[in-house]
Every structure is written in structure tokens, then in C-alpha cells.
Length: 462
Image (cartoon, rainbow, N blue to C red):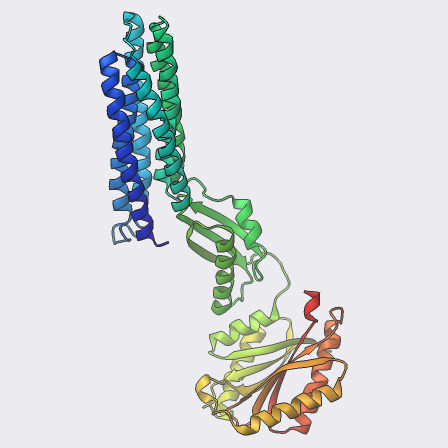
């Protein structure tokens, strides 16, 4: 549901509620004045405030529905919260005035005149209030509207107030006239309680109390790959429009593209858990702890700085120390000499970033874009079938499937296929199998320049 349709639905509920509240307030006040019952008059004033609050809600929701602008970049949603606070304040003031009148009546000892009409009006209005309160609360939860939920609490307090007044009418009819004023003071307590329940959540929102539990957010974000630590969690706003700020520690050489992917996964995971999130800001901090350096991340970061691509970063040990082997992608329009200069610069940067690095082995290859790839040729289908046949001959006990082939800009082809292995197969053994098949395919089919094999366990093990 869009914000516009939501606000329209909220206004529709408020209009119908206002009509019902006006009818109830008029009936209670008129009969209360005729009978001179302070309890009924107080209850009537209480109900008239319900209608007034509905008007406040209509104005506030109209303003809250406005889109963000230069003066209100976060939107106008807080106007609804402000209106909710006004409802709570009006309840408090009403309780104060009724309380003063009740004390005065007790001192004077005035006795009201109760008739059958008084009982009929009170009983009817109780049933009306039950229907209105139930409807408004249900719609408030459905529409995530704090003003509807608050107003339903206000209307629900009318029910208890009316029951108190009804009891006072019975007592007065039995000759205990002072109970009418005492009942008015009970009404004050009930109104004050309703005011507290309305004001408390509104104040929490306006003073930016945390909208989400920090430990729950942290436990979700901590599971995202690439996240080392959640340094800070800040949340604010009403339950249907929560703003969340996160400070996340990640490895220092993480590239911008990689960090953007981490942020996307964080937003997706939190969106599944919390339905009211309006905006999630993720701020990344370099990891300060002494943790082992991620050589692949460092290589990608240095390559990004030079506009290069890098993949298949493999560390190895030499007699002198650490070595790294990798494939480096350079623009295809460069000459061999130009590519050598750029990659040499990259290797020098890598040695500076990793002091313990003693040897770098780079395989230079052209970076392929979508525009570089020629059209699909009929030959490709036959080459793919031949590659699949070789794989099955090398390892017939494995299930080879999902083979794909594409033409590359150098005139050759790239093949990918999937291989099913037992779920408890060691990774190095699966890697050796893939390398063996790759070697056979490239040796027997020279047109195939690149082979990618994905090893995976059977589906029933997931």
C-alpha cells in the first residue's frame, strides 16, 4: 500500500469515527444536563473530545501525507506524531477540569435526578463505543497508523468511563447521590490513564528513542558475509517508518563494489525481519583489529585503483616467502607493451600493500565486455557436446550437467559446466577433478580457450 492510499484510508476511518463520537457526545451531554448528572456531563465532554481529536487527526494525516520537500527532507510523518501528542494533552486537560468539578460537587452535596432515559442513553453509547473502538484499533494495526491506535485507546477509555457512570446512575437511583461526584473522579483517573498510554509512545518517537532492539539488529547483520563487527546501531521513528543507521567494520582493502554488495545484503536481511523500515544507512569502517590480511581483497582493491580486473588470486609459498598468482584483466585495445607497464605498476602497488609479498605471478588477459562478444555460431553447439563428452569420459561416476558455451572476442570459446560430487568430498579433491577435466578439454578442443567447472553436492543434501 502506498503512502497516499494509506493516508486516505486513515482519513476515511477518522471521518466515520468522528460522526459516531459526535452522536455519542451530544446524547450524553443533553441527558446529563437535563438530569444534572456531573458524571454524565463529564462523560459527554470526554466523548466530544474524541470528535475534536478526530478533527486534529484529519488535519495531521493530511499534512503527513505530503511528500518530502526542501524544508522537510525526511517527509512530514512527524505531524501525525505531533497530533497524537495533542490528543494526549487534551485528555490530560479534560481530566483536570472534570476533577475540579467533581471535588466541588462533593463539597456542595448536589443530587442529580436520574430517569430511565439516562440509563437507555448510557447503555446505547457503550455499545457504540465498543464498535467504534474495535473498528478503529483493527484499522490502526492494519494501516500501521499510530494516530488511529491512539484514538482507539481514547475511545476504549470511554467504555470504562461509561460503565463507571452507569454504576453511579444506579447508586444515585438508590439514594446515594454523592456517588455521582465520586464517579466523576473515577472518570478522571480513567481519562488520565488513557492520556498516559497515548502520550508515552509519542514522546518516545519525538525524543528519538530506539525503535529497534540493538542486539536483534546486530545478530542479523553479523551473519552477513564480509561483516567483521557491528560497531554501532541507531534507530528512530514510529513503527511504520523506522530510520536505521549502522556502522559496520569490514576489511580495509574491501572495494567499493564489494562494500555495496554487503550493504545490499544487509538491507535485504533486515527488510525480511522488520516490516516498518523506511531507510537504512550503512557506514563502513576499516577493520582496526589485528586480523590476517585478505590477499584477494587487497589485490582487487589495488586493481580497482588502476581500472583493472583481477580474479583467481591464489597464494603460494616460495623459498623466500609469500607468493601470489592471479589473472589480471586489462582493456583489450592496449598493446602488449602498454599492458605490461600497467600490470608492472599494479605488481609494485601490491608489494607495497603486502610487505611480506616476495613474488607476484600475473597472467594478463583482455577484459571482455558485452559488446566484445561476437554472435553465437552453429559451431558452438557441437563444441559444447564434445566438451561434455570428454568430461564424462574423464570422470564417468560424476553427474555432468548444465553446460553453457559462449563466443569470446579472441575468436575462441568459453565453456562452463556443473559437476555433482559427494557432499563430503574434500574441496582440494574437487578442485583437482575440475582441473583434470579442464586440461583434457582444452588439449583436445583448441577452440575452447576457457573452461569453468562448478562442483556441487547432490540437491538432496541441502
